[in-house]
Image 1 (cartoon, helix red, strand yellow):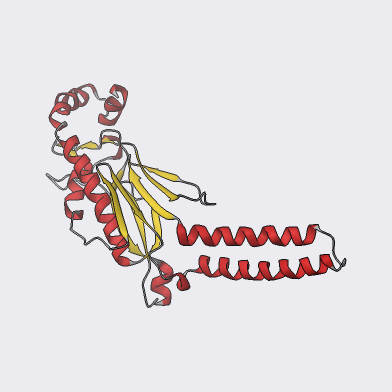
Image 2 (cartoon, one colour):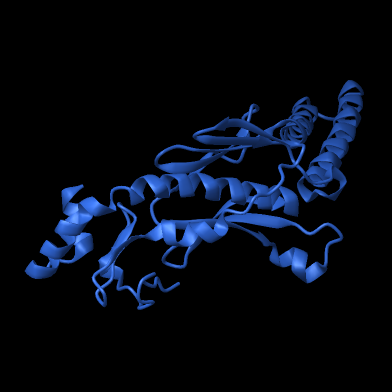
Length: 251
């Protein structure tokens, strides 16, 4: 995605973008502008909060929700349910064979452990909540309270342009009766990272809108500092240094 100057609509070179400060310098008109502030204004639409989604904190934002999709439509839930049933049945059969002296003790134990693992996976799907929260450095995503196979992860805020909700390729291709969506972090360089997946549209849209509002609030604070960057920008132009190099060396 090519970043353009809001004053003259000319493309801005990559070396004139400062990711740490989230500001950029236009060579064509010498204007300095906040990157996210120009992009986020169009993203701040109000979306109604789904009843199953909780706001644990407003500033910084912290959201929590259990799976918002029908469990009978969840592939992970169906697979865990089937495996837990099969392994439990086989465990009972192995116990009977062990009592009869036909199999060694380790076989019932192995199948019992596999049944417990499938049941635990089932519990994490039905009981755990997805938590999404922000701090000054990153967006954090984790499944709580039961320890899950999927580890907590974080997405750095540096370079994020906005967050968006997008229908999954499988949902579009298969024409699901209830379309499924992913929430993405969109970066100014055109890249993106997955925040949360396999959601219904109302959940995905609300999460994206709340993240955008939080990011926009941060942009307002950074925009207030733009006047302080102007003398440094002109000095950089006179000495031939790039704006990004000077800002990076001063941070």
